[in-house]
Image 1 (spheres, rainbow, N blue to C red):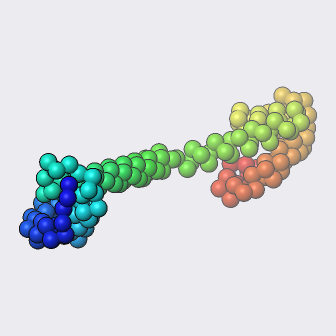
Image 2 (image 1 turned 180 degrees about the horizontal axis):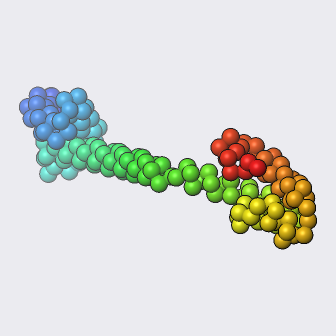
Image 3 (image 1 turned 45 degrees about the vertical axis):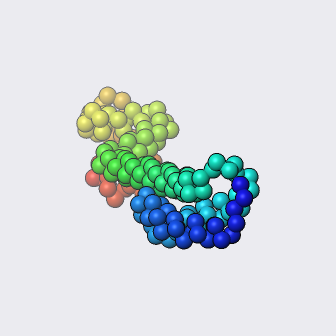
Length: 185
C-alpha cells in the first residue's frame, strides 16, 4: 500500500479524536487512550508498505487500538484478580490467627508443660522417694499412715517428701511462684 505523508496527516486529523474517544471509553484514562492512539498510528505508518491495497487504514488502526485496549483491560483484570486473591489470603490468615488465639488456652498449655516436667522429675526420683511422695500427694495419706505402710519412721517419710519437693522446686523454678501452694509441705 502506498501511502503518502499528506494522506497520513489527513487520516490523523480526521480520526484521531474519534480513536481517542473510542479508547477512552474502554480504558477510562485520557493519557493511556492518547498513548494507544499515537502508538497505533505510528505502528500503522511503520508497517504501511507491508499492507495490501484493500486494507482500510482507519479499520486497521482501530483494530490495533482495540487490541491494545483489550490487552490493557486484561492486564488490569489480572492485577485485580491477584490483588483480590492476596486480600482474601491475608483475610484468611488473619481469621486463622484470631481463631487460633481464641482457641489457645494458656492454662491448658501451662498445665500440660508443668505436668510433663513433674512427671519427668518424679520418674527420675529413686523408687522409694517417688512412692512416698505419691502416697502423700495423690492418696492424701499422712506421714504416720505412710510410715506405717512403708514400715519406716515418720522422719524417714518427711526426708523422702522433702527430697521429692526439692527436686520438683529445682525443676519448676520458672513456675514456682504459681504453684508454691501445690508443693508446700
